[in-house]
Image (tube, rainbow, N blue to C red; front, side, top):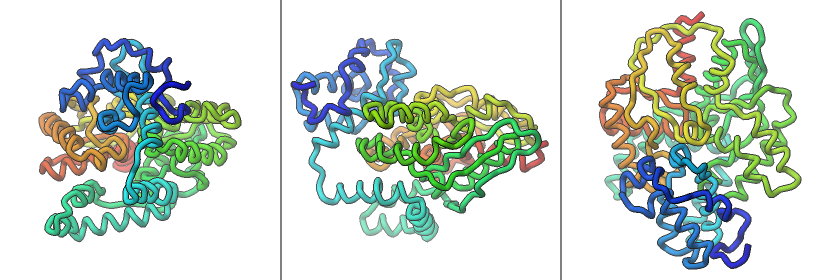
Length: 427
C-alpha cells in the first residue's frame, strides 16, 4: 500500500472500508461534535473525506487540520447506527489515530503521561486502585478548591470526575448459583471496574447467581486495552489482548461477562484487532465470540428470580459502545421494566454521547462539557430521580454533571439497580 500519506499501513484505514462511505449525510444529525460545532470536517463524513485525502497523499497525516478533526472525534459510533451503507467508522477512526500516533511529535511531558496511564496504571489493578483511593480522598478534602485558587482549574475539573467513593476489594473466586444451575460464566472484572467499581462487579455476580448462573472470577486477567486502542496505542492494546486470551480462553464457561460497555465492545473486536497476527487471529475470534454484556446475557437467559420493588422514576441513558458498538438497546430496558414499582421514563437524546468517551473528557474538556450540559438538561427535563447507565466512564461523567447542575438525581449502574431490587425483597 505505497503512495499514501500514512507512515505505516498496518493500522491505516483501508481503502475498502473508506469506499463504503457514499457521503450521503445520514450521519450528520447523529454526530455529537457536528451537533455542537456545525463543521463539516467534524462530522463522520468529513473525517472520512480527510482520511481519503491522506491516502491520496494530498495532506500529511500529521498536519494540523487532520490532527485537530480526528482528535475531536468521540468515537461514539452513533454514525454506524445511522449509516445505510454499513460504514464501520469505529475501525476507521481508530486506525487513523494509530497512524497519527506514529507520525505526531509529542513532547516529553505528554509521552510520560501516556506511559504512566497506559503502561503503569491501567494494566496494574493494584496501582490503579491506590491511585483511585488517593483521588477520592483528595476530592473529599476539597483539593479542587485549592487547585482552582492556585490556577490549576483543569486539574480541578478532572478531580470533579472522580466518583464519590472507590471500591476495590477482591471478589471471591466463585459465586455459586442459587437454585438449579442454568449456566456458567466468567466475569471480566476489567481495570477501572476492578479498581474503583468493585462493588458493581460484585453486584453483577450476585444478580447472575440469583438467577441460577454460576460465576467464576479469574484472578489472572488484565485491562482489555480499549482505552489504548481509542488513543492510537494499538500495539499496547494488542499486547493486552494476547495476555487476556492466553489467560482466559481455556476456561470452560458459556460466556465472558462484561459490565463496562466500552470494554465489552473492544473485547468483541479482538478478532479484528489481531486479524494480522497468524498466531493469534483464530484464537482472538473464538474468544470474542464468547463475550457478552451483562445485561445482554441476563436478558437472554431470562430472570427466574423476581426482583423486589423499587419506588423510583428512572431514565436509562444508552452508553455509546453498548448501543452503537454492540447494538444492545432493548435488553437493559427490559430488565428495568421487570422491577416492580420502577417507572421507566423516556429520556430525550438517550442515544447521544454524554461526553465521557473514554478519555475524551480529559483530552477535549470544552466539547465534553458542552455535551454533558446538553445531556443534563434532558435528564432534568425527564423528571427522573434515578439515572441508569451501564458503563463506568458514563457513570463518572453523569455524576459530575449531576453535581455541577444541582439536580436531585441518583446515578446508578444497571447491575447495581437490579442488585438493590433483589436485596430489597426479591424472591
